[in-house]
Image 1 (cartoon, rainbow, N blue to C red):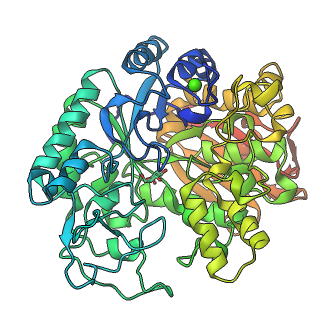
Image 2 (image 1 turned 135 degrees about the horizontal axis):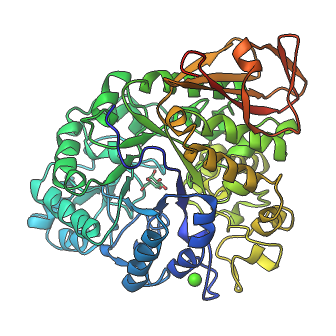
Length: 563
Ligand code: GLC
Ligand code: CA
């Protein structure tokens, strides 16, 4: 594998609306990010992904862009953005923005113009079709519910939107549109952006011409996941994008790619791949039902382990996945993957260590580093997210009552991760002096940065330790490039793996069980150096390691011969 500048770094995702508000309007802003750069530097972050801050009507929280080259006034202005890039650079932090180019906003001038003149040049930037007999061009279901086709005013023209109806899909088959997008990307990269996180990218290639698929629910529609399996030729677009943008700037790119197949992985993340990396979503999709959240199952520790190991095997020798336990589209990882008995600081550190030591680029989502948890929503009115509201309706349609539906939605809702960041124990967790746009989790009094900063045993301190370890000249090479070798996979509740480097090895052990677990210790383990431990001690005796409930330990081992 070719070495790249971003290997070995630790990345952090900011959801700007909920990070830090500096002007009291209840909404996080760019100046808020600038103010907290020292915090991020101190944590050890070297790559920062900022969710969309472009001009937007916020039908999908900024993932509906009305102007790719303007900052939305709720976040600040272009000077703030430029200052952020400069200040981040001064602290050794590379900034990524979100690239949302499967669709734009229906308020983008391209779409406004397309509606005015569907047969004109901007009509070809979108998928517009005339519907004469009431029969839509295809029966695909949008991700946020209902058909993907929406009528343009009183005309007989319809447009395609695979997400919200305020997010019309851009027509990637049109070379002019593609050039327009590459120009915009280069404009940002020239400004000093280090790269992009690329949103929903698998959707840019549709199977054409439009046709119906077998319906998979009562609504007579078909899930986009099924539809997209039929799409051929996305790599031509993605390779072109790489050649005309990222490659010219040595930029970093991480794709939001779901359901990638083993044989495609080299095309995505190999040395000649279209992206630097893609997210590993295998654990987030585990247990999800095509029928909706009400029919889904939350993965347990053994599922979690299996998903991680499968991805490690898939990517070995090919490239790097980007590893996460949560993001702005997922519930909080500690509330989701950990059994009830493990939802405490020790369990949170255990989960953290297990994913952090995997091969790949670790991403931390804001608040994860202090163990922020899901929100206890008491009514659907407290949830803002379009997707959650859609799934709530799906629950009701399936016959659940309101209480049951709220319970389901609370478990999976994207708003769990979108509640404001908890900085201290003052009002609103120190996030804003005004009224926060989304309710703050009441547990901010216990879970906040201020209370953890000075505590060497806090979750925050544990994250700092892990990040420091990734940078430690002695262990860096092994952590970044070492082969992942799963161990004792059949032992339930145990997650154990080696990271095998040329001269050193790292052994990672985690006990997800509520009771002690004894594992045979090879001689090398007994000679290992404890690099990380979420318990006070490590019990090695008579050839066995006895792991306490929820204990996670990372041992560093030097190979004998190279000593
Ligand atoms: C991605 C984003 C999500 C958004 C969707 C549509 O999945 O992460 O937040 O709703 O794309 O842009
Ligand atoms: Ca603000």
